[in-house]
Image 1 (cartoon, rainbow, N blue to C red):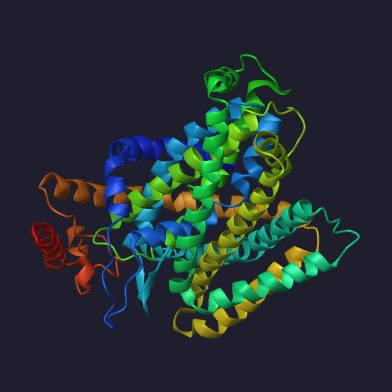
Image 2 (cartoon, rainbow, N blue to C red):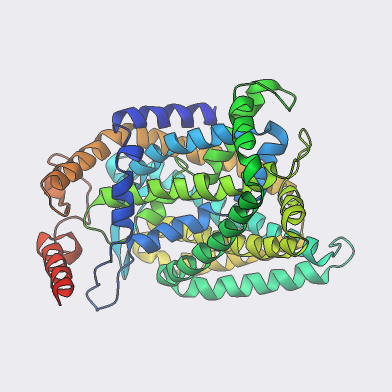
Length: 479
């Protein structure tokens, strides 16, 4: 049910936006490096770049290493093709939901907050729906997913150190305490500290992982054409290497692609709303790029590492398959590197997941959110510790159920609000055609209510601010 709706909405939005995810690819790279404005107290606002890494912190996790390996071991090489295809379609969904997240954001101290709960409440005028979504995403990401990420860190570390956690309890307990304390310390710094950590951890670790993957590809460059041919032919049931035929291949590819990049899940708009930009469409474009970064780059590298190592199919294998494949290509030291990668990917996911919960608790409790947020931080720290010390098969089942409910709720809102996102996109492209730096004001959408942050009072949303920035840049070039 969920996959059918996700795919249907992604295709619908691709058509309605005029394939914005491909048509405006150069524009995505242009706006991601845009510097932010300043808050009234002189501190820097959160830039598009930092908001990108908050969302990437949640997107790029153990699923990029374990999940893709699992898809290939069960679905075969063809799963990779369908993963790529759905990333392209899913990028349209990411554009619309993140644009809506920006459009309906609200000011909060040194940053902004927003997301599906906000655009459901004021955009769709369904406060009950927003409250329901806020509760679901807080439980799903803040508690369930974070306990699973912590569990993945312990498992990877135990494998690397050759420790049997059923016999030796010191590793899970010690690591659990360490993770709980470190994440708690980061939480205290709020969204600014989370964005700062994420913008360092994710690009550094993802960059190192990508380099190793490229090295594996270079070492096996003569086999790459055959690998690509195998991916394509197996995707359509030719040269099938798994049981279940083409159906299981397509299902595994679509499921892993969409669940990895989170397009349509309703999580990423919470991160998209944090940034200070001159136009809501800018974060839509940036988060579309995030889908490509997660799936076309990071997930593909995992797929290439596994496929170039001649894996055994029809046997469900996750991270261990990637570890074995990398070790066979580069030596046993690669197993330890992958442990570090899993550790940092999972830790950054804990930070991103936590923020999604905090943003929605702020929605639920409004001005009296502080006590609830403090309590939430303690509960998340407890969930991280719990996930470290016990096996959580029930949590995996709960994650699937909660995630499905969350995504379906969000997709209903995205479908009905898509017409407003399209008006925002039209406003953006019209300004670009005139050679202007797009600047948005809520008066640009007459008849659309509930827009709180775009009244022109913030310097980031004013034409004068962006003209001054352009003049300063021009002056700097002539010196």
